[in-house]
Image 1 (tube, rainbow, N blue to C red):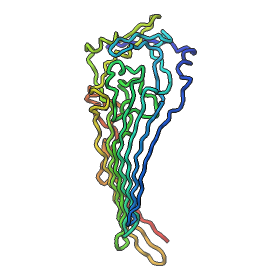
Image 2 (cartoon, one colour):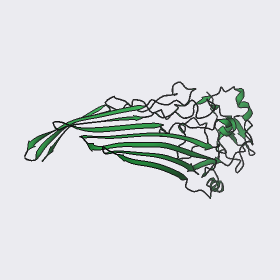
Image 3 (cartoon, rainbow, N blue to C red):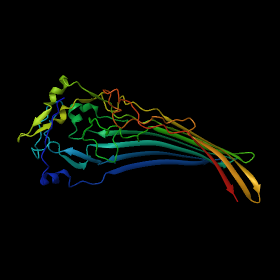
Length: 335
């Protein structure tokens, strides 16, 4: 086995000052919401809402040292725009090239305690997508320019992650927050003989893997247009060519073909009875079971490689252990 070691000198203080945009500012959201609420006979109430959010100027990193081509499928020009002794030099700035867009429908139906029965039902459906174009120094911009659309597992809104969309680390899959829908319901019945029965049922849609990526053979002709795997600067310093990566999106766009984990179904039930002891005293005995169906086993994709179709050992694998079925017995004395 042969290993290539590239030694890079420390970054000069003057260069470090260029790595922070003087106009850097906090991201902001545009948000619109529209709601409708109505109460019906029988202590029943309906609450519905539509939400639209757009995330602007998210924090981002852009390479300021590379000579990138002026069009896709052309060779990388090497490093040295600000320092020929360095490779990638990222500048922390604001994302002005794309926005994160989120839309959701939400509904809540409630029934207050009447006729010894109360109920709660909620449902939520969401859609999200990226709008705009690639990070100016993202290798994907030059390698697969038409693959930008993504409406499944997209970037988080709390980090700097779009500088290399073809990365093979965990940046593409560490977002188990874009679940497309959820449904929750619960009810309580005060039955005869001081018996109380209640139950809950929750459905949470599984998350996506993130854009599915593949790896070209090292001899693939598709690598040739982007130049050699190693570039040499004017001072003789060797650096890896960021456009010479063998990683490619497997589908025409990032949103296409993303596997989604199975929905998680969680059922809870509780049964209790209050026994009058006289003298203003009573005992409440109850049994409660959480996760009756024993659901939730391996329903969240692994953070390491679940989107790598070229690696059968990691593609589509899960990471979370099973949520255990549990039962609680409780006795409460009131006096």
